[in-house]
Length: 235
Image 1 (spheres, rainbow, N blue to C red):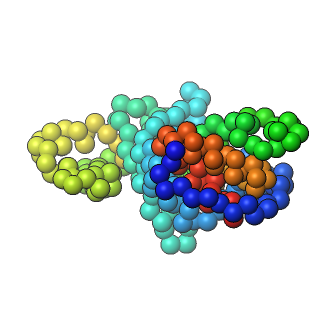
Image 2: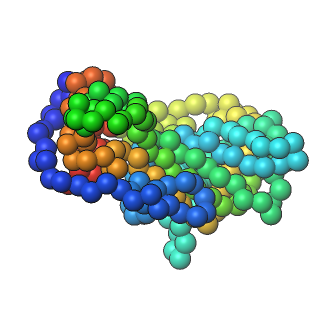
Image 3: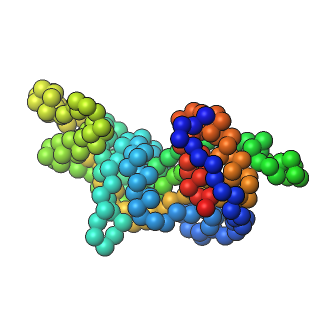
């Protein structure tokens, strides 16, 4: 059982339309999230991205944490770093688009949680999830100062909630200098952000309340997090 859960009202909700964007990620209208503050919060909460590029050897993908900075007049910039030995950065054609995929909360949804299962049985299992796609073009940084600032920023973001946060300066300077030589900086200048929150919006209010109750009954952190998201989209 999830701590702090509350009973929800059974306000009626219409079934979602099947319309979707014609470019980029397949996203029916009910699942589409375009609010910048919601998308940015998801990237900050789940910073480990899958960076996908197309090079001469075909598709390349690397998994790396990226920090987002909003820019005036545009979506912003994602910054991180990868191993210098990683061939992805060396093989990237600068005139092609790259894609960074952020994966948020996700959970299986059982038809057994739907009241409609008992009413007509015309239901199937599904999977709820949150994802953000950031499209843009990459540049790479090798300057020591840039790399050091990026490593510090990534570290401070993850250590800020700790009672005694670890700092880059806590490590020997020579060790840090050698470590910086082994990485290359990544900058994705974002041209388009797409958010998809598939959290049972296409079900009736009664079915969604059933999903919330089912997830809360599991009591795991992932289930409770998804129950909260379904609840937020219920009203």
